[in-house]
Length: 145
Image (cartoon, rainbow, N blue to C red; front, side, top):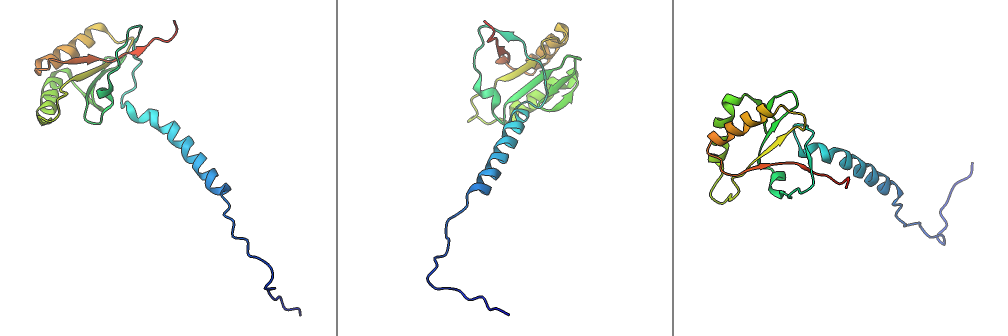
């Protein structure tokens, strides 16, 4: 039976192996790249494409009031489906909760490209009855030209 003994002259390898850490970081990066676009919009609608789109950065904020009208004519406030009769009161309640420090009292409308025009106008009327003076209609920039 041989006994293993340590030779004092050999150095200990103290290098850090970063390959496993890089692998984990790449997996996390891919996961975040896939998940992030899904977090922005709670209701998926196909926005109309326009040439002269204006950037509305406040629409992406957490406390922004976003009304969505889908292709089927369903109306959503944030991620919750609401009826057109309740939309005005719910928007008014959300606007009342905003403090004076929140200067942006704009309501943003995301209407599907193929949504019925009458349903979109009904949603706009319901928002206007809540006393909203600033209504931002969200679109996508047309990059084909």
